[in-house]
Length: 226
Ligand code: ADP
Image (cartoon, rainbow, N blue to C red; front, top):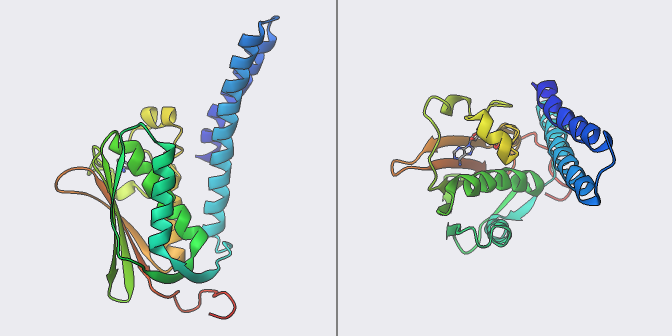
């Protein structure tokens, strides 16, 4: 799967370079070629980065640092950043958060999981809404990211966390997705002692639920002093 995924951007980069070098061209044409090469190289960089993180997580080599993490502040920061990035796209975040909820977890891993869910939600919600809810449940928390997009085909739901799985390969390729985001988020949720679930809302749209413990699982490497 990985070599197949890498072949596409490499072919595109070589094609652009060969085209640009085939005869003298205007500065504009060179710029155009370089932009396309840059896009494809960035796609490759993302893919390789995610493959490395996934391999590390699966191989138990991900270094975790469990520290008190304010989940409310994290969700606010991430949604504000995404709002700013997608300003004018008509997307709106509807937050249902308590005043403050601190858990002991690895903040980097949690950020990666949430960013993934939020970016997907923004991509699929179109100009609709993304709901983000956080609640305490038993000895843990539940974070839900729901969108007003088309939802996930029920036949795809059982496969959605498999590496390189895409519901619609042709459409995803254009949007730059590599089908590793959810696989990585699912793996990282497990490392944090939690789990990630996917479903469709009755009223339409996808809903991802992340369950996390308030404290790290027994045996997880805690930061000094915790
Ligand atoms: P990618 O990096 O290609 O986006 P992901 O692992 O994030 O891959 O997602 C895997 C598949 O799940 C994709 O085919 C995508 O279409 C689908 N998917 C993810 N999030 C949503 C969502 N919020 N609504 C509908 N489909 C989604």
